Picture 1: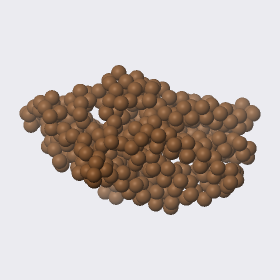
Picture 2: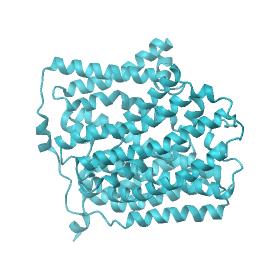
Picture 3: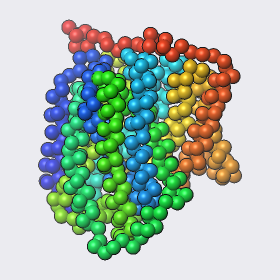
Picture 4: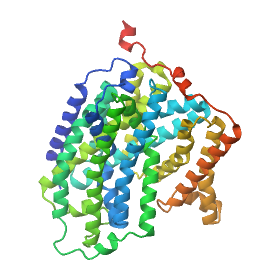
Length: 479
């Protein structure tokens, strides 16, 4: 275990570095710059940002556990799941940029396309998901500090939240992306060291259970498919990613940046999952609940634990600032009257509740899974807005049908309403059928109701209804 003084110095040094990088971009001049920094980012910056903002401290927990419990199919499924959203952002993002070049995010497109009812629902889902994700990241910070050092985990949570809030409120999206670039390079540098240490910690004897974990069976494929659907659905409602879509200098920069980010994510998630697989095959005591990566670090030297601590801080800060900026930008896009000062205040306020949850060390897994289902039930109705025949009534009906479909599956499988709710909210853990039912029902109902409506929308007209956010800066008004 790393001593408190060493931990404080290491964490403080990393956070001060990121704070300096983020503050160096300067203050935002208006809400447009804060929310989207339109057309300012090249492929390399976007690639490192998509990479760093998408791999949080969960990488040290989830992929190794999936590798240990599901095997190779789960590891590959996780790697595909974490990269597929970026490929989807290329296709969908390019289309949305073409339709609403002065747009700001997916929620705004839904409002323009389907009106206030569907818009409010999608906005709610997006905010709830990002708040839960922020709480989960801060909780993971405390969990890692508690495992590897003697520092009070709450002190680490406060430090990370305070520093990311400072530079995100100051420089908005530009600060988030600039720090992502530094964090991305640092993560890639530390990845090799951490991976080598983890592999060297494996027992010297030949793995005895490798054959079972390398088998690809029906259960493994189902687990992989579940991860793909869950991660894809939630990622496409993450406003932090949509900010980056409109920040791209052009479509080429967006495409190349997303592909670069996807490749870098594989370099992290795939080895992390394989470490868990090898740990399970080598009969290492994984603990309860299983934490293969940290099980391999038992008895490791202090310098090893220190590197993992720095790695964790870089992982967490890169995802936390993206969530903070995405949350604030989502709100101010809907309420531009708040102004730039209001946006900065929102960064602070929207961090408080997740930080309080993280203080308690509570598990937000069940909330995460429910958010996954809500996103899966809504993804088809929302993006069918790119189809000119889709109608507002069809989108709302499809979103409702997705939730009903998941409940109906639970009712058939469980035999009672209480059992249906448990199955639909994943009381027994993540499973594919509720997702499949939600996706199938929402897609079918949206398409059917749209066809019955016999209406057609001129999608090119949407751009004329975009509300500009570029208003005078608060300081200028004061003068």
